[in-house]
Length: 247
Image (cartoon, rainbow, N blue to C red; front, side, top):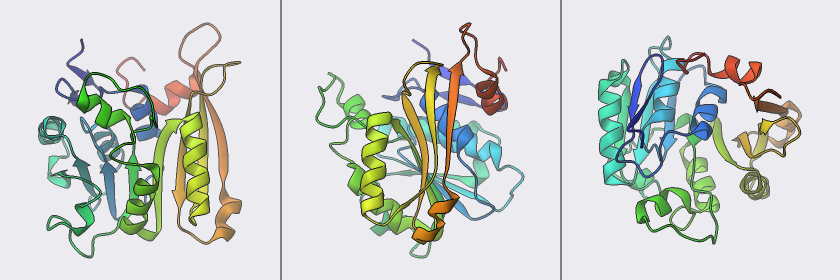
């Protein structure tokens, strides 16, 4: 079993994390649009891969602050060490805690609002559990429902802030419908296919609390991971070339 994942500018140890570095996280970290300034929050950081990708992408924006919160103690310790070993350790803060209580905790400045909240959240609903409780916590919505996640993000975002996520297609449709019912606007979405002709497996999408009139800005995209011959597609290579050693 792999103990880590090396990118071009950093290394991610994930040996004690229930969820290892995944294609989902890599896609989200590369696809998400960065704010021009302000602060970023990664909910359920796990090994810290999303925070590290965003830190690399915004390394020229010296004032950008990155917070990462993780409930599991083992994963939080791994993420903290990954951050410490990275070139951007001075601008990343690891918060060990529950996102559902974090906004009211002493660790959270009362005036801190984020311009971007990002998450690769639990997505299984009423599904068969694994034997590992930590893996269940990372993958199932029992302790962090879609509704709770939307409420927390709404509380933590600036008025024009963006909430960016990745989910399986069915979960994404459910989350987007729930978000729109509670006043969110879908700004951007990308349907991810493993290969042409296959149904999408994942959806990358961004939500905002902006005025509903901004729905006209919505962009819908598609991304193929593999070309017909099984090699990585040109668009996948272009998206991840700053991270994958092989690209």
